[in-house]
Length: 132
Image (cartoon, rainbow, N blue to C red):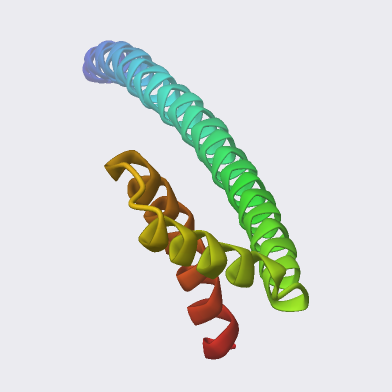
């Protein structure tokens, strides 16, 4: 009888341990699923960040190319204008003659404004040529 009682107690203990193990296993699987979900969310977020970074980098490179292109275009036109101005002294001479004629023949104010308007880019280009 004592052995029977011990056997019954042992079986109850075994069932209890088996039940606890089953519950613990269920809890562990729930925890694993929870962390898998968090990991999936983090991976998706990482992919979004990588995509956004790639877009920003592409936009930055594109802007850089556009700016470089515009800068090159501006330099080309300034060089052409400076070359024209430097290679041909006719423009400053023609302007000087026009100013002299305007002084001799009392020209209207608009003529002086026009002459001054053309004098400014000539002076500016002469300054650019001297500073190179």
